[in-house]
Length: 273
Image (cartoon, rainbow, N blue to C red; front, side, top):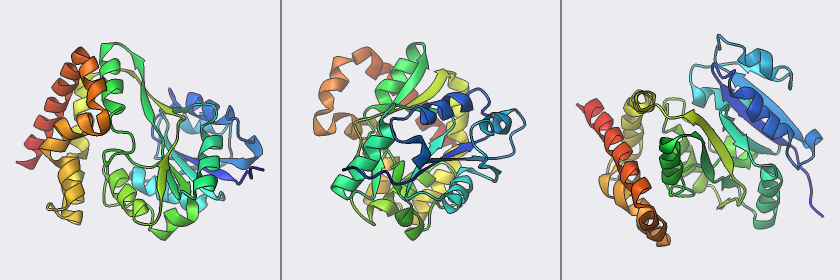
């Protein structure tokens, strides 16, 4: 018989009044017993109605910063669950995601799980972004999102000196601590509509932190070479493990995906100068 341990869902927010309701509603609609789900919202000084909306669903709404890594660490320390699921406010869970995550973790003794991500929104460029994201699941470009709280604490949580690649850094350390897996259930990342300038500005914002991340692990590190190097990011991740078949079945999406990758590459080259 399946046990239903408590799961703490941590949502980090900043001015997310447009997204927070849908995110929380997807948590409330889970097939997992509601009484075994703890909802924690860690807000970073929102100036909109984010906290007001969140308080309709939980009394565990906190204000903490200055960045996402610190918010997540705060949420983990406050969490009373055996398992942690951390989310951004623009994410929406498929209905049985938490149930499958707990069952899989118990059955296979996984300490953490990757969750396949789909990009949700309208327009051609959202299709391109979704196409790109499907190649990253459970690779070194991805990061776990669900896992045991004791293991999260054991490795020291997220590195608060990093802003952007803290996910990669956390993922490397959790993989060194035990066995990880991947769910069949997905989560949806609601990007609504694509704006190239906003997309590139976000990449530029994180660029300096990627330099710190590379220095932390060493530029000669094999995973750093894959995550930040040319060959794997532009070719390897799209063709490994038979993924080349899907890549070549969608040439228009693939071509426009490369346009975005090249634009991001230009941003990072500019920041290195």
